[in-house]
Length: 179
Image (cartoon, rainbow, N blue to C red; front, side, top):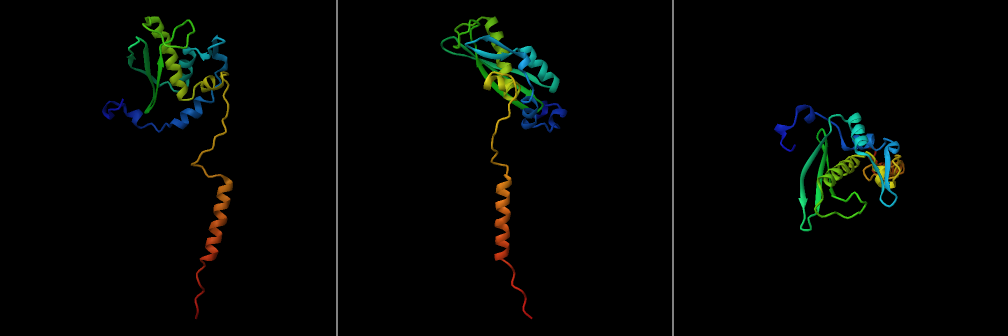
């Protein structure tokens, strides 16, 4: 999708931002769709629910699979891109066993690869905000994080700046003209 000649015009005209997508998807309560595979391995969103939610908010989204990496120990790393118009998120995911082992498996079967492709896709959707709370706290219920934005000026900083400007203006008063 890097070649501008191949990008459809409606995508080039899109003004969608990562922030807008994050603010939309991170507020979706996915808790009704959260499942637990095994108490030791945490919670997850089933892929078909994740796809349905993405399709509801961004029906134009695309899943793009990049070439996998095969390592010397015969394990595989999957690479997935999720694209919404001109926006893109990339993630990688090793192929794990269904048996609940959190280490990559050698010589995975086609079924192992397919299952982990779905997991990689859901993880990549979380980079846009969908179900990030599942990865963060396991609940699926959105939560507001108290983060400071260094690009935003607080009311306190603004008040101090206005006082400083007033003081500077008082010191730099133009002398009154003498006649």
